Image 1 (cartoon, rainbow, N blue to C red):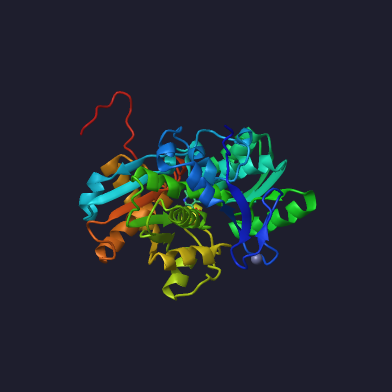
Image 2 (tube, rainbow, N blue to C red):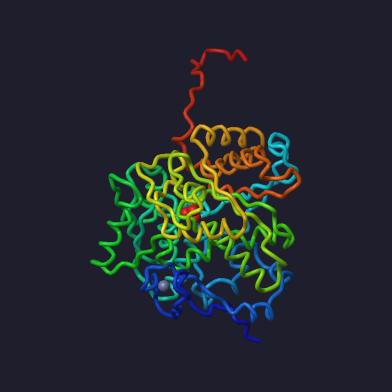
Length: 405
Ligand SMILES: *Cc1c(COP(=O)(O)O)cnc(C)c1O
Ligand SMILES: [Zn+2]
């Protein structure tokens, strides 16, 4: 019997509720709001169960009914997904927690969770017949989209700040992308991409200007639930830049609740930002529903250096609706947590990921997290992608010298 691969239904504007047809190329709503993907959840419920998912290959396409690619032959994959949930026993002692998990996205293709969004986004672009994409990036997204575009046979034009991690430039170059550097921020890169895309007919895949990257990132939420036997954790801590990850995790939970696979959304979602770029934290502290542009933003955690996110209102909504929180962490605390996690758990996190450990410590100290609660911290990338961040000197020996330990 023919089994339907996706139960994609429609696109709906996250601001005004206007519906759009997903069988043709869409960007944002006429009102400017990002579009969200809707599925026929009742039919999914009739067709699959959690037990079916468990039997499938360990990658994010195991959730294909809840993903937008209609025909399996359009799937562009490098094996992304089903990353480990590592129990962090030593850190539990240090942080005074009983159940701390780190979901390690650092092992994904291109070394960050950006691979999830790129895999789903480019698969759908391929399905819709798109031949050329363009994107502004702080580095990791560009590297992922350039790499998956190469696999899909799609041309990519990438613009990133000249200070973005050098390795991500190399990845774009290696993947054959047209790469440009800008003497400015990601917001400047975004303006350049917008103009060029209109002029040359490129498909602008900027954060949330294209609906399907979010669906790829949503799979983090599905995996966390499946890996915890469909028991929602009490807290999920997420390093927030454009916010697609946290919006996606919240969307996953809403869909699972609607299908009845979880009883309620009991998880509190926490946004972590760097002290040098914390527009979401500031808005949350002031109980606002949108953020303001953060001037002169600066942090070593390049992936979360986003001064104003298009989906800020969706991030804040996810935090408010789940009784979550927002925390800012200094670069010094980030490096301390990065070293601590590498030394105590053998896990070399990216700075963004390390910020979640610092946030867990802070929230536990404040009593906001209870000792017995289950906490999931997201390590969004590998420390290997940031060779510039750790600055140290090892003693230099001449060949005839002996070690004195
Ligand atoms: C992009 C990025 C983030 C932020 O992700 P958003 O979904 O844009 O909030 C966090 N960590 C790393 C390593 C990233 O590359
Ligand atoms: Zn709208």
